[in-house]
Length: 381
Image (cartoon, rainbow, N blue to C red; front, top):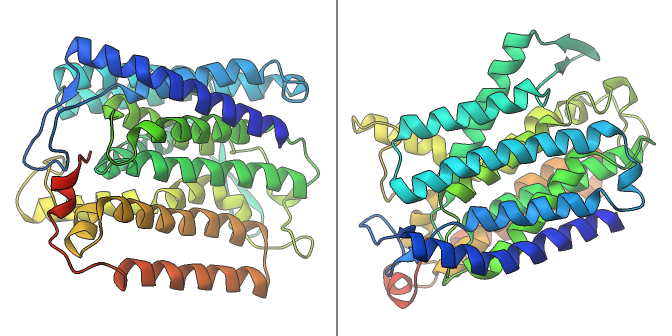
């Protein structure tokens, strides 16, 4: 775990430093978020946070290749991680073009599909699924490709939808990436397998980049990630979960706190985990599609009725709304990881208490003040 922590720190540090450069590039090229009616910020804020995060993850990747333990891992660990970073760089460039030129929705979708195709071409995709009875369901190439594209595109757009308040998307994805790191590491540890796992490495890279970026993006933000960042984070998170496919044979998986367990949850985590990690943005995405369809609009038509907007409406400050959504994201992501790896009354008690505290903070704590106060006092993404 020490080497993963070092990878995390390198990604965070380099991202933190590169953010200053990315901000300057954005200002010089005019990649700036102007104030629109649906936005929360009140002054123009530069984009290109995605470039800084990509640089931080790339630097940490090359450092990881030199570390004593990780450098001795199987060839596929760094090969798959490199493929994911390459696809991430591609989708980040599409985002950069959007931040500069405001691409239409279909063009961005095309870029997302092409980036997904890069993953599939180099073998980062769903290989098979486990069904009840420890039965392995092998996917045909077209089935694997379709399921992979759907997962990546849905995750990318879910992150983009939740990117509406300072620090919100980076925090949610960072929490999810850290949960993925813990899951991969502990699952390998419990089953006596090598601790050098592609998913854990990518989780450390992604969590570190998010942490380094947050110091510049938390309210009031000095830099936005833009589409270059939101699409990069979405692809990295989805692809990190994809690398788990086939890593742990179902018959070998056991849970902590009592040896082997017939539960199907650990073997389904490659599918469940990205969904659980992003349950908040996925829920926001689904509600937005339903809401806009009922109004006769296209699903990508923007509005100001996302979950984070509603948090502000019920009386939360900008920062507290973000922190509470982080808490919900952590509850779902780490709750899924805990439930998949451990069982017993202690785990259940922890999750119930966590849920109660989160609900109370969400609905019982909001101050009685005008919803627009925080938008006047600072900026918001």
